[in-house]
Image: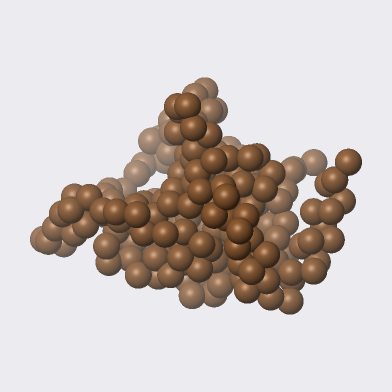
Length: 203
């Protein structure tokens, strides 16, 4: 049975080898790559994607999840990047299909990652990187309580111009101070259902 984390109108499940065709689709979409990472138009072959998947299994520093609707439609990939060091710290990322942009799924998937890291795994800090021009991603991160902490000036070269590379961050205590408000606002009608589901995890 596949393990899943359900929240709102979506669920996250671990990326499997037979999901790599979805990764290949996302990694080779010119519009998606423009917004989703700092190396736009850096397309990947299936062999490269398979090699990355196998490296992730060996090293265990990146965990990827398929973001699905409750009826099983794959909408994208959510990622957690471990940052070794004295602080329990991780980065997060999200890569959705274009047809699911502005659907609200990005906010809920980001909330899912924060819940997994802060509420269930007791991380101290979570961070995310985003291109200066990716305003949609910035709104999603800020709505989930993350703060713009700084930028690498002119660190990205995209379509003939240099752009800043923004870093957003959130600490565990900051998240818990506003967790209830964030859950209510983002989950809306699914808020009570989610609380009921996670209460069943308690010993």
